[in-house]
Image 1 (cartoon, rainbow, N blue to C red):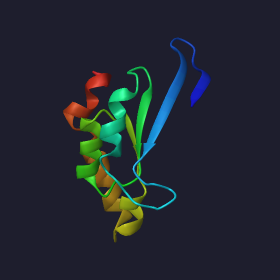
Image 2: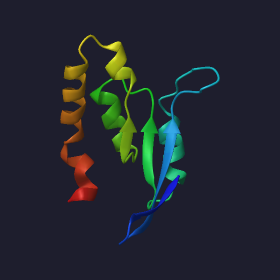
Image 3: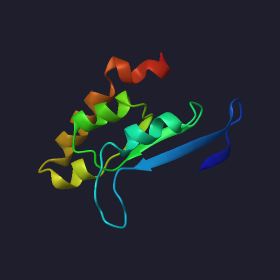
Image 4: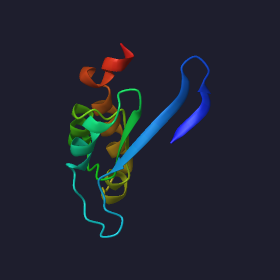
Length: 102
């Protein structure tokens, strides 16, 4: 998906989401993003979608080039969504995940 005019200085912003969950079978393959991400051009925002159980999955997706993650599972399966969000945010501020912002 590309949003026209999203950034006047840099042109359209394009986003590709890679879903770890097969929507027909509901089978989850957490390696799907790692397999697909290398074929996505660098100028496209890469979103790892589904199967984030906690900070370890967020970090793994980031290590494979995810610019963003779509989180749902970690929030609906755990007993404390507030703590789950805090843990994910804390994992998201680690230095190796901020490379593009520095």
